[in-house]
Image (tube, rainbow, N blue to C red; front, side, top):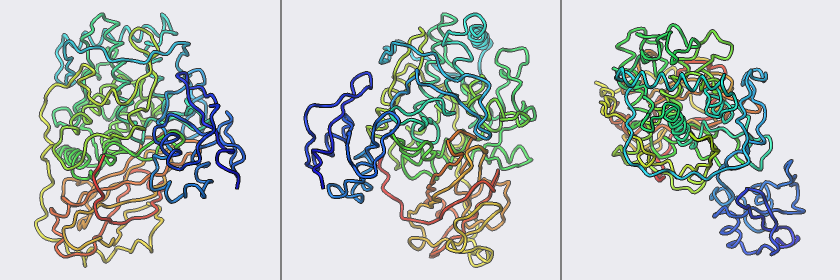
Length: 579
């Protein structure tokens, strides 16, 4: 075997993200290899002659494949146990290399160029000092004075589309940011034809926080009011569970005809897509969904934030509980089902064309801020450098192209804004405890063992008899693994434990364990794969599992179950809840 020194050289990125080869040979010591080439992410490794390694279109060799090929130096088993050893943060995209965006279902070219305007100058953004905290209001409570200011700001932003279409602050230019980052226009730097996707991973919250931050500052600049803030759609509170009325005035610049007309006020949003016909049932279902995705089903930081997503990873490794829950529900509930691609809110590429999108995501952002204050046993921050150093590009209020990092947006108050204080009714909205212990022997009659069912195509309601890791009220997690979906479809299914009545419209009960959902989005092969974990500890207390060593899990498809295949199901002891 040739020596590692003869195979590899150090490639160090300069500030412009180009690469240059070091004149020094690379040390063959494994400890040096891990510390300087991988863990700190300051170097890349360029290798020649490694068996079966094909360079990418830009001449690079995938470091992960190279490392796996060097089994004599550092075995694959060790690499799997330490995934960060060969990872790196997602870099800000190269705007000059932006390409076409296509519809997720047909592959058709979209009717808009999603690519942002290129610039020869990129500024590393520094947060300005906070002189006075700006308070984002609840949309259903705004004053007439605020509404007049908001409408004027949007009116001026839309006017830029005609007066100066090249102004990056224009309404469509801003809307296309979401399209470019979500529908395949940007490749990962160094990985040709591997999309950047800011959904379905731990980048979801920070990307949208930065997006709204600059959108808000642009609106303020256009009306010469640096104190301007966006409102938030308070869909987690019964008082805000209608589409905000300020967005439903046909004479207002906030109005958008590409919405589901059946869901205009006074319709109550259905965050669980339960199909409940009774408004009161929808409200209690909504509160149950919120409590579940924010507290009850969350076992780790990643469960809430989304799965790790690093340079070279395939897009969409997995959503967190909030993203796949209330976030997806509001997008799909607002989108117009009569449009080909469910525009505007029902598709990533067009969502930014609806002013309600920014109001919706202001509340999504609020959920992140609330979650970080919850007093639970789950750590609230991710300390992984590949998360903290991930970067994005945006145009600021002065039309400057700026680079931002995730690390700088973790505390929204450092960014100069906070949220109006409103009641949080879901905070203690635990489902009522089950009056009597479920008769597992009765409900298990229609259930099958996992080995007889999986992989499972979820065409219908399915009951599964799943062994516990320990008897009784153990601290356990339900894992649904290798969930393969058609990414072009709206997918949703719910999970119940020891549910006796199978009333699909009712989520406000102790047996409700959680949900999986996705908004249609673009991937190269129209396929997505993810795994979700649902904490069962509190659920066990509410349904009384006594000395049971088996539970019955019921899977209820809500939308396009035919396009979902679940690879496996299991119950494991609760893993450590580290960030």
